[in-house]
Length: 79
Image (tube, rainbow, N blue to C red):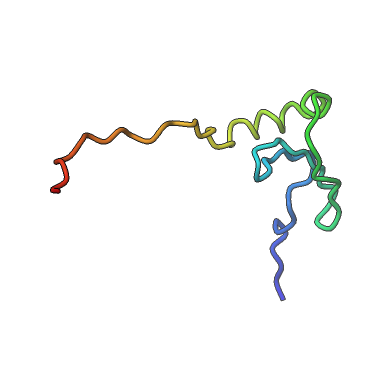
């Protein structure tokens, strides 16, 4: 039986986004113990600056509220 020694998740601070776009913070101690997730605070961002920078680099761009493209008027309807 062979096991991949790198199968355990990376330990340390993790930032993520919730479904509604809120930044979350969690801390992975080992493969079975995680503290969080909870809303990220400024203190979390300062204490774990490297993890936060990595999160910002990998986070998807926020989608703007672009209005739907305007359609050109078509032919008038027949009466």
